[in-house]
Length: 138
Image (tube, rainbow, N blue to C red; front, side, top):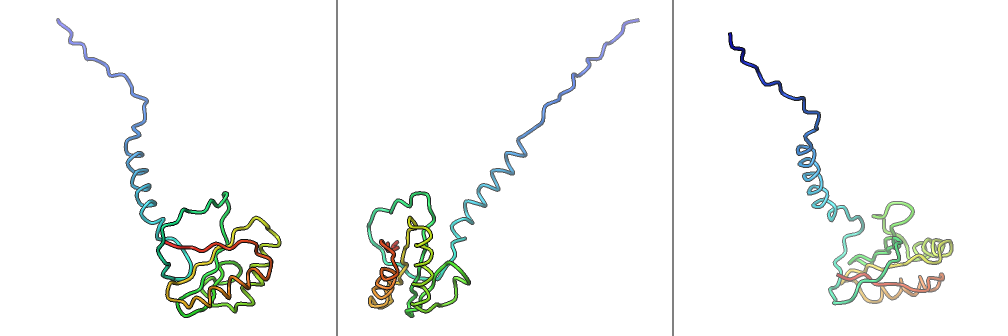
């Protein structure tokens, strides 16, 4: 009698990681698409200029906004979508800069706002001890 020997398969103890890589790629694409949409703040139409970006020294800047109606908004303390008086904005920013002298302060002024409103804001910020104020453009 002839015996036919069956080949025994060796056990494979490896994990197939291809499905995990596929899932990670999908998540990466989702985050890459949604991250630019997550910017918060007041909707302002920034002026367009060809300027070099400012080095922020790995610190998040403090942004004060002026919308097209001339209303002021600050993104610290309270709701950033609530209009704030100029004196309150200057007081808040002054306290923050006094506690953190290296903090960068940026002004986002809508291109349709009167130039006077932006100048008043910058003068108020300088009056409370902000040494440098940057302007945000596109």
